[in-house]
Image 1 (tube, rainbow, N blue to C red):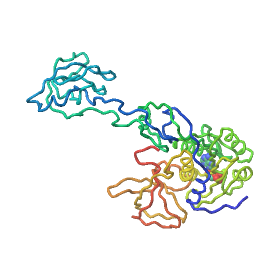
Image 2: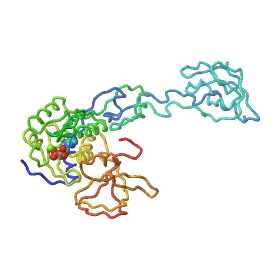
Image 3: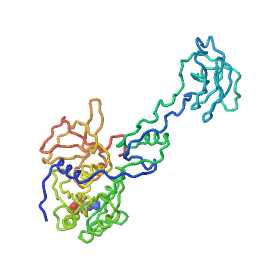
Length: 420
Ligand code: AMP
Ligand code: MG
């Protein structure tokens, strides 16, 4: 068995990221592209709006006809037509005339402005109301008022979204408005999740003496899903090399892009993951100077990148958060790879052991900035302190004591208002 290397968090992260690359692109339907990264520039084939249209229900007219009009001195115009949204106007607006127009309807030829219906004596309420013969307008307008011009939003021929852009609902809407029903996006990483341990039960099994349920498999699959990647759940492997090999084989057959396992990478007598990787992969065993965390295996299994997380649930989740998350985002073509951070003030002293520490905390906003409070017992088996947390407070490497009133970097797992 090879000697474990001692690495800083940054060294380990650099090595993990060096082992993964951006995945190839695929063509998917527009909605399937949500949350994914564009693999090519999108050039608008049409202008938006495609034609000049009214931004209000009202009357299309010539601004010159309303010069000097007011509620005391209304202008009277003859109504010569009606244009609904979706219609194509065939009447020309001439001096002294107006055409009734609905929001989104094309501005008829000749008209250079629209006046809202509220500013006329014809604030109609229902569809049955017949077209008036004439209207009185209580105000003046400028040329162009209440008209949305062709190309105001997007001009045909322009690059509207660049390669690398992440598709959010608003990008999906813009693409739909341009008639784009399929997009080239980076493929979603397929991430195998393997739990190892003789003590593990499936989630729906009753507890038995000496056994616990496999929570890591669920936490990690959920972390993968929350990143927009696809978890391939391999289940539980017993602590034998054959069992681990068999499960990893299923991952190879599912053509995964990354293996993530938990447990079996420390120095216990049954830590078989290391052994399997040594035989059939290329592997580094690290003691990362990190708390919680420490043991981490990284390498490849049959040329697929492999990340072996520690077994303790909090260590596994935090190691995923620090290393696997960045690797999956890189494969997805996304940036930044780190969570947002803020500087938060602590109000009780913190003792650390000199490793870079990630303490579970709640960060709140105050008038002066951000305040952080630890969520209780920091044992690496205390999952509920992660449930209460929205941040990991980072005590830097080499620091053993932090005084109350100091500021620490808070790695925001989520903002108070958001879920992920
Ligand atoms: P190990 O790395 O195998 O020494 O495991 C460290 C600790 O994590 C032990 O207490 C295990 O029981 C626990 N553990 C390992 N795998 C899981 C899992 N999938 N779900 C929950 N706890 C686990
Ligand atoms: Mg074990």
